Image 1 (spheres, rainbow, N blue to C red):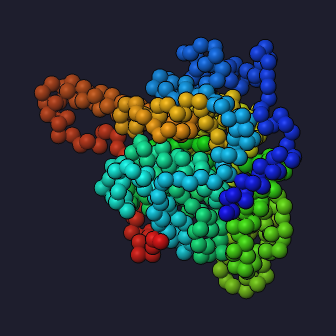
Image 2 (image 1 turned 120 degrees about the horizontal axis):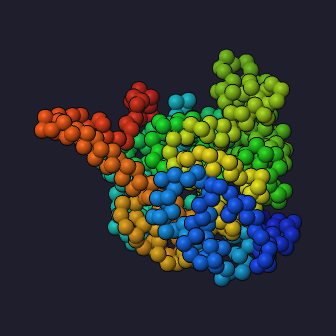
Image 3 (image 1 turned 90 degrees about the vertical axis):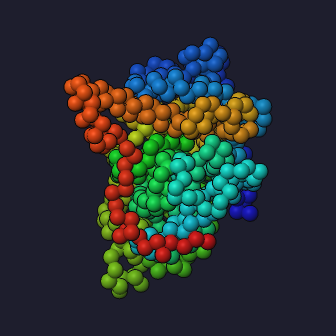
Length: 510
């Protein structure tokens, strides 16, 4: 019921407040340039449509990145990159605004079933992990729980920061299941029916809870590779985690679907007022059930009277603690709704908050390939010139931007979506589910291609090491056969003592 209410509100407000041109997108004449500086005249652009004709190039995506061997491999082996042609059969979904509303807000009855794990954290807080099981009518994953001996790759999905499980997330679970992945959805504290057991909410870019969840997933599935995907503002948490953890993230590759990069300016006014009002209303409805508990640590009246995303974020994490809680001797990090509340009480609280939560604050520490799939006409993120950090993709070899002309926000439905799907994670091309989003096909094919690329690199290193070992004659060969296999790259083992960090008896499942 709540999902239907949000969808109807977004459609009505969009129809009343937004100009007609925003519905159906700008109509350019054939002779009018389409901002070539973003797509064709930048030194880091490697167009995925260069192998096709002029008409195909106009509708396919451009891969903006620093030229590298991995980038060339992706262009050669990721056929999905060249297969994007926005479908326009449904006129009312042809525009970026309505397409975005449909894919992010419209309710969807998914055939995927979920089993929930409640993970109790070190501070007694709870996050929920929803494990997606098989689609109805299929034979895979019939067991209620995943096995610790399974070698199937795990796809960790991080929804948007508002707790809304969109049809985009559900369809991604369907596509991942059809290709042999084990999808698991990460739900923050109080989101999607997760109980709030501590008067503490997760800050926008604080990866502490996600770090503990990843360790638990590694404990449950030690034999499978771990991939990650962030949707919309949830990509901010994923980027924060990858930046803080660096090479210890245990993630093989990651994808951000329609991410918001410059989050502080986005909260300060990067959204149209109609969408901002709908998001604030949705958050207030989720927090209202905890109004009494939050009132013990925050000024609930000022929190629920805010009418903007910035006001709501400041009310949650940058307020002075309520006087009723100052008599206790606990630290501010456990009595307030977020961490480091003392810093928020000082002057420049808002700037200090984003110094700790901006997703790109530790971007230089990211050590895995990260693909961002964005559209120029995204009405939620804003204009690409001011919201896309193109210099990051052109200078950092770990970041790739797949930029399309059309697609909206998480709404990359392609005219070819009804055809062949992405290749499975361990083999050649395969047939996907009918109606699979183009972005989901590109995401899964990116995971497969990066895995194959690094596997080929490892084989080349092993062959070179074997040749060096055999170079000294028979004795060298015998020495190589008895040499430790540690010269070969392995998936990093968890360096933490799991049982010392957690007491798994505290983790319960509903």
